[in-house]
Length: 32
Image (cartoon, rainbow, N blue to C red; front, side, top):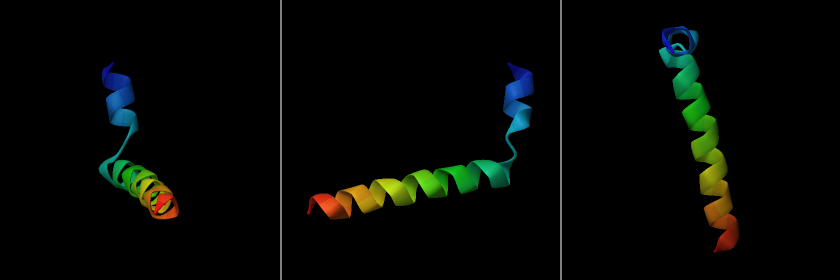
């Protein structure tokens, strides 16, 4: 869907990936 792809801007996508990445890293550290 072209509408959904234009809904996400690059900055929004980077922010989303950063939040998800930080949460994943925190989970990995807690497992250690």
